[in-house]
Amino acid sequence: MKARTTLYGLNITLVVLMVGCCGLFTSSGSGSSGGSSQDGYVGEVEESSYGNMWVEPYSGPIGTKYTFYLEGFEPNESVLVSFYDPVGEEVFSDRVTVDDSGATKLKMKSEEGDIGGEWVAYANGDESGRYADCLFAVESDAADDEEEYEEYEPPPEPVAEPKVYVEPYLAEAGEKITFVFEGFLPREKVDVTIVNANTGEERFDFTVTVGQDGDDTAKVNTGKGADPGQYYVYVEGRDGSYVETDLYIEGTPEEPEPEREPEPELPEELEPEPQPQPQPQPQPQPQPQPVGMCTYTISGASGDDGKGCPTSFDPFYDLSFDSDNHRAWYKRLWFGSCGDLSWKEEIKCKAAGGPKWTDIIDDVLRSAPSEYHGYFRQELWALGRKVAYEWAKDNDKRRIGNDELDDWANYLVKSSDSVEQRIANVDAQADYCLANDCE
Image (cartoon, rainbow, N blue to C red; front, side, top):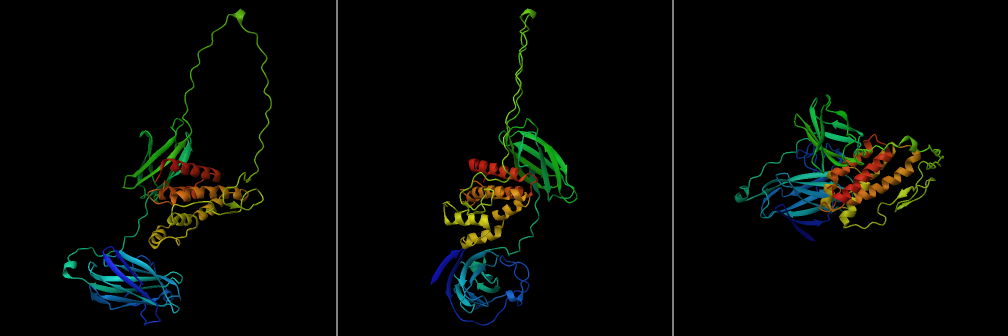
């Protein structure tokens, strides 16, 4: 069966044939010593982790048919084969299944429009983790060579970006807010400006000189007259660092009490006789709710821990999804699995990383007394269902994005607020985003 695909100017024809064990060529030779700098390989690989891959012929003009031989993989496993052009762009990836001996072969034909130069093919076994690569060359016409391109260079090592956390993220007017600074330059002076998002009015500003390690904290009182709503926080280091975040103030601003008019004085003969004042009667006190007792059960939850709280939860229960991708990304946020996505989306998923909700739940419960675990676990299940369902939608439809997800995960796990307050704050922010589109 032939599958013809045109991507990034490359025309590839693949014919996948199941064959027996072929010749031997290991990636540990001079062509692959120490590994490749392309995606899909990180660090040194043990000899036992290699499969074998080679190509015939090594080089040819436009129109040449190349045959790639794979062996040394686990029997019948799926192998991801990727092709990179001379400028380091991944042009095409597809999966093949090797036979009972762990071998297969596939063919590629170069055609007009292909970039001339040395290409590289990579193969990665899904189950075994075995890896192989090989080089091959496409000889282009002189006219093709006139197209200029930059030689591929490995991306620079990532530099840690400065970060600012606001605790609590949702504060009351007059409450002290802690700003946590991380990753700035040593002894850098940092100017912080806080602006009302609704009016554009600058509420207040201050300056902090971070420590030698680039970290510091500062506490600021919002003032009892602060208007409720969203505030933008602009953090600018005088040595070039820059970060933006936000915070929310709830409640209503205090209003001055209206002045009372003085009561008229009555003549002495008209002064009323003093009346006996009623004595306050004791009021019945509300009974405290038992600690950790769940008063309701969310959809999809089951079991009983003896305090009325469920012990298991199906996050997919009674949910309908816009598409298979919507369901797969929802599963990714809950359990960290990228397997149900298309191969392109799976590559993005693995590269993106990020939190998974089951880990967030475990981390939060570590800071809560064990008798509260059943209650808080159900609250986090409900919050995760709300956040994940919206975040997993297509980018042009969702109202909760990666920035919000990262901020909330960090706040839930790291904040010194009570667990109950953390959950309530993130739940309020999620509702705000669903109403106002934070993406």
